[in-house]
Image (tube, rainbow, N blue to C red; front, side, top):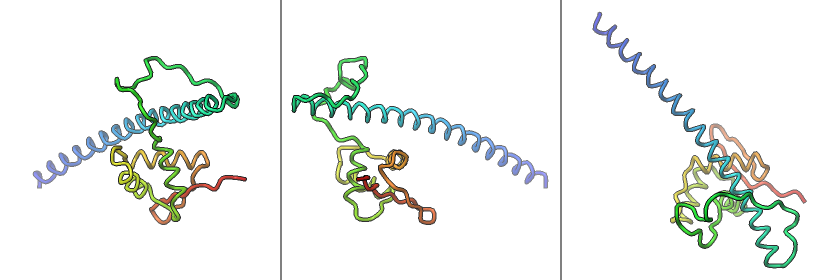
Length: 159
């Protein structure tokens, strides 16, 4: 039947176009995640340096040989707002949650727990999962796969 062939061809073409757009969107998002991960790593580095400087200023001791933080353009404010009291980073919250948990946690479970504890923050599962994988890569967390599920635990510090 010619009508069915044309319809099948039209649907095949539409599906092929949709697949192509999907792949392009995946690549765009991967690039954005990579950019945000690099930005997060830079912020975590700066946080460590700033903590070291803060401790040195409070105790009057030298800043343990850490390098000075990179200077950034601007007036120390983001989005025109003063930084105010320091908030824990998402990575710190995740590490604390894993350390306090007696059982392995999925990215979804970590997201739910942190969202309930920090209602003022918008915490996304994809960002938590990326952060967990970064922690695994840096040796701060362990990954265990059970079927298609992935669970994370805090890595035990070497003594």
